[in-house]
Length: 133
Ligand SMILES: [Zn+2]
Image (cartoon, rainbow, N blue to C red):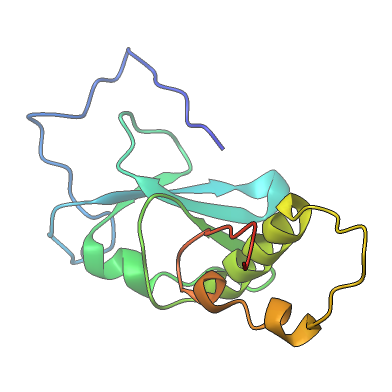
């Protein structure tokens, strides 16, 4: 999703943003936004403005982030090796790869060669391979 920029609250730049977690004074590197309607928490680059459901997080708290039960965490622009969202990203990557793959007019001779998905399995990447040849 795209976060709209509100020019009325220019916060990027000189002002130092702090992690919003209690007792954490580290500088914030990401902004967590809750989308209640979708039960989705979006963790993205530091927002340029503050909004009621957005929380700035430092690096450590960003990586430790866990969503409430039933919620999905979407991480934007940052590569994080931990957290449940990788499965979703991999599933999405597979779906994208499948959608992007050309429809072969003939049966695939070696289906296992198509399924191992080497590079596609890289964590944190939405990497699409359109061809294995
Ligand atoms: Zn923190």
